[in-house]
Length: 546
Image (cartoon, rainbow, N blue to C red):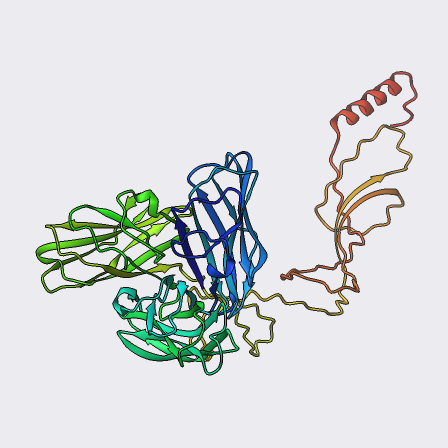
């Protein structure tokens, strides 16, 4: 499953020093990498890194952004230089596993102009329906008091649990809690315990890190959640540790609906403005407050669908008063909308409308007050959805057909397992190869044209016309000239695997032999010549006796 990670900051890039930031949220750039790293809860790939600046670095200058994995630069990088204002790396994909730390590094070259940056990346889980929950603190733990932090994003830990609340926008399961401290708690039995809380109740998903160790995980327990559940992370010191480390953690969200991942946030530092429309970052972050200038809270998105917006207020707006919340996409108000109104209502949701996000769209959250409502702090969550690819499979059928069958089946969404005793429709195009000894008889079709030359003493120039009518058998004693043209179909043993198309035909065999039919007719011209010669002979007395 694919998950879009969104981020940005109004803290300008440093133009001489290398600094670090997180993959999600709205954090300041920091000189130390471990203060901005977050822990991955499951295996998968990080890819599709995109950065967008609010201005160019300048001619001959650049910023290089690199994904860091366990403190080591990876192949996933973006280079923005000269007059460019954005860059992408959609070629490289970096493998990660549960417990790996991830962050982003920015390295300037030739003192570029300081710019604000927004960015986005994508996590592709190796296991169906799994996405990341990335959290951490922006300050140290407390060795005396129990504190609470965000489940997703990060800020300082707080004594008041309500200030760290976030709203889960869809149903699923949370599991695989990984925790890392930047220093160990002190001397055993000094320890810190991290526990996921749901609706103010501690859950079984918990990690305790004792002195002389800095990491721990719980991959055994799972916590089911429903849309609208309120989540926090509780941090307890045990045996009054001598050290106060900073902490980073990560978990896995397994959605009931494949393709859904979660985005959660709040603005613990500032209540909503009761009279003026303002904007906040969509993802939870450090020192997040509502701003009149939307550009100061931009995060960068990439192709996905936003849906299922849930909002919780710390106080009801009051009779006839309200707050309306809308995600903003590409500097435009989306269709998702939640209005909370009245003296007793503190929650609202929109599970009907959706908003499409395109690559490199700016994202933010807008709040519009009406009727001067009571001051309140909002907590929210929404779903980022990417449709999973359809599942395809090929089923091979084995049956006694006497032929070689080729069957191709395709399923658009889900694999089906069925016995073939059902009524299956199979389209077959058999090819049958016959090998046989033909041993056929050649059949000749002949057309005869017969011309005969008669050699006899006629003493005259005779013209003979012959036509066939009755069969006559005679010895002509003539010299016959015969012209034959034959149309022959030859059949032979080919010695190959022949592909033969057969249809009935009738072969006739006869002995020609030939039975000739001859008819004679008088020739008036010749007869006239003979009479004339006879008269001439009579005239000269050579006619003889009559």
